[in-house]
Image 1 (cartoon, rainbow, N blue to C red):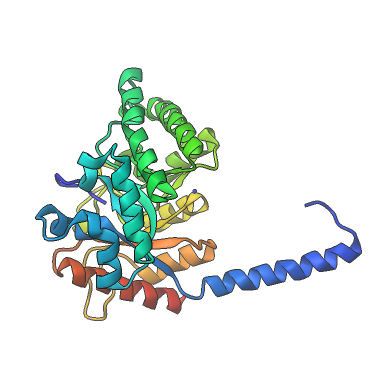
Image 2 (tube, helix red, strand yellow):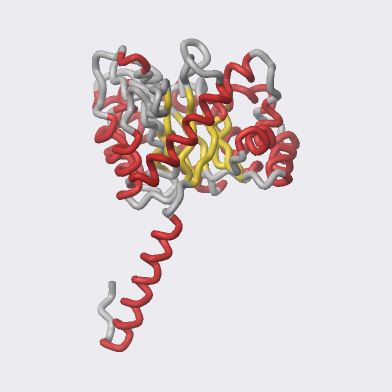
Amino acid sequence: MNNFNRRKFLSLTAATGLSAGVGSLVSSAYAQMNMSSPKISLAQWSLHRAYGDNTLDPKKFASDTKQMFDLNAVEYVADFYTEQKTNSGYWKEMKTIASDQGVKNLLIMVDGEGELGSSSDQDRNMAINNHRPWIDAAREMGCHSIRVNAFGKGTDTQIKNALVDGLGKLTEFGTEAGVNILIENHGLQSSNAAFIVDVIKEVDSPYIGTLPDFGNWCLSEEWGGTANNSCPYIYDPYRGVAEYLPYAKGVSAKAYAFDNMGNEMQLDYAKMLKIVKEAGFNGYIGIEYEGEHLSEPDGIKATKMLIEKAWNSV
């Protein structure tokens, strides 16, 4: 997502070993059955123009997703709900709306709440406190995670140490609420997957993870947009997704433009989804259409069709 302004044996006896082997085979077969078709969600940013000009009501995102696209899971964008940030009743109502439609609330994407990797203790702690209400909102809505940005300034070592502290403290609050803290590749150091994996390992919590985005691998700009191949310094997107996947609790399928065959013109979806599938990822793949050549609804539908086609081809 871009911001508005631009935009994770014990040895057994022979008798029990046979049982364990059978169980393993059954589990493997079950996993393969679950992966026979992708679980697809919708990232709210795919409709940011419609929400920005009030064509659609953010409160009805879950019901709109179900009725317009026949999808059963959603990913919210905090920017559309800033006035409701601490309104517990509002989030409970949002949970009811989604539940009534049979839609699962997955996560909230949070931007503009300060740098969790700031070298200033005061600014970093302020950023932590700014993010905490979104953890509460996620819990109220039944979301499993919030997505945050791993931004900071300074040398790599300074940024890494600050992120370990900031993300570590925020993850403690997330753990108490049962809400994961996810890092998306969103430009600058957050798009250096190897760097972020080192941060995650140091935080060392099951409640910190990643939300790998097929796009957003620009290392030289905040938000990391790679539309039109305009970024001069790009982390290899296929490598980045592969490195993020062991920690992933969601995947963002970015799409910009399509050719006459329905293929994404900048990203090899078959290659990308082969990486996702072979990693054993069995969570939701979120549509995040950011193109300009199709309407937002048509872009969402085209991305959905491409995910299904590419998934079944690998």
